[in-house]
Length: 236
Length: 154
Image 1 (cartoon, one colour):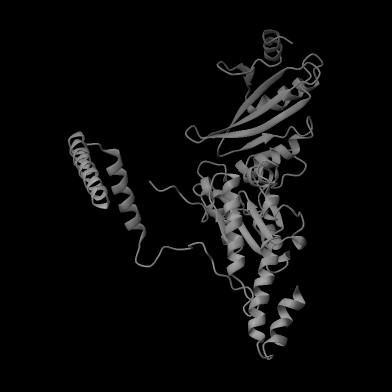
Image 2 (cartoon, chains in turn blue, brown):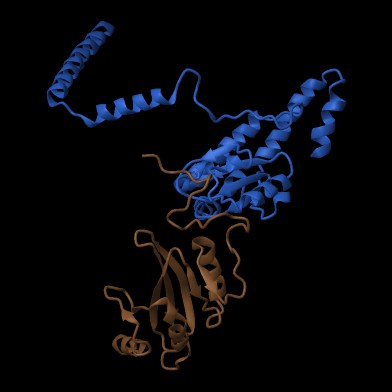
């Protein structure tokens, strides 16, 4: 792949119509990449049982997505699946593994511990608060541990990202389909206020209000029934 | 051996040994001065023959300013189990090493040293085992603090 991805733009760009050909090469290469993602199994705790073993087993069968060839060696893997808690002693090993992988390399962080440190954020002297403190992470799969379906969604998101993402002209530059930060103009406070409002609204039932509301809706229903019969009569 | 017979046989070894009640298995508390001779008798006596140290750990009772050392013993020949505990003050945490009785104690005591800072007399190689060699402090002590650790906000 090295020859194609590195030298091809230099040869093709000067040729008339070369950039069109290059764009279709992008599609071909990305198609090939996304359909055979070989995962490097980096299971350090319970997520490894759920994600590595349950997804590989026949019931969920990760082979449907072309990602069943789990590699214990980083040199043969495309996607590093972090499944479990990362502690300070493990952090240099994780960094080395990431650097040993051939480019393009992708990282999926599964479970609360790999995302943020999870239940060990407070009061822990050893837990790293998220794998993204050590290596760049492409896709986060939340859960403690996530369901295999959740992991598949993460895998499909990664495939989507590869399909729309890298080009030969700008290797290593990816477009994330996942929102990494809040949309502009919206703060955490807004979200919290909306949530509190919704929860309070859901938790309280005013019988008088509910009766009035149902009365109104019944009336509206009746009226709509009349109107529909009216419509029918005009059609006739 | 029956629990009743075992407890009377164990208590007969040393008059300073005290039986603890409300425990899931036979538990005996002994002063730290008498700990090593007591444990070596438990190990060598053929009718007791506690030849396996299943676990060794410490508990930090910070309100009482002491560490409680816990030894979980098991006999593979007689299939009976018991627990021995002893207390050391927090300002002078020196305990005799039992690695000459059970080889596994060498690493278990290294781990307890690593986490609680208990010093073992006559230990052949008392180094940190899980944490980095340059680590400052002993993280399982209740009053442990460092720059990395986050307190849970109220």
